Image 1 (spheres, one colour):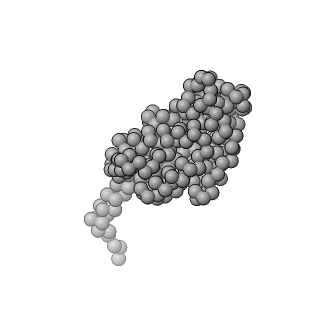
Image 2: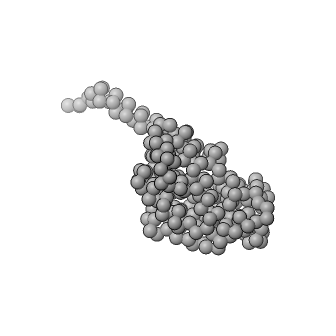
Image 3: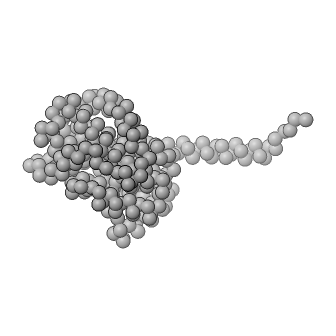
Length: 249
């Protein structure tokens, strides 16, 4: 005898399916907004040391620029991706504070440290205002500001925000690599190292390498965080000594 499913149960299943689909779609919109260059987090005020490298004649040709972008991504993956991953997996106040203090101790030059704090502070302020459906973001920011317990470094905050928004760990880490690539290539455009069309071509060409680097450094513990291209860190540390400069770092 064929069993006819109860219409009430079918209706509930459909409702749950619709809610799940709607939630996933809204999560995608939040993800796109977080990656949008219009989000006022101050990323375009920082060149990841590219301006200093250009004035030091380390970056002259398009091939030099391509190599520099790849090295920036390698450093980002090896040093910062573990912090993004840890914060995304445990998006709570205690983990965030611990990661922030550890990263503050690990960043070796003052220029890079200030850039990380400036971008992280801006991201936390924007996220707390934009993603109002997550009241804990505003509460965590207010408590941290009043206590002075954290420096607001960018990588842990990015992971924290993505974790609270419900993004998958893999998506979060690749997103962080993407915004890094986007910002350094944007800086190259503003420095007239490459035109807008050339920048788009470069980003597309580097994307497979960024994918490989993301896979290489993904899901690592913060105890494994390290610098793989120390020359870039040295160059960025010299940024504040430039006679004239367009970017903050």
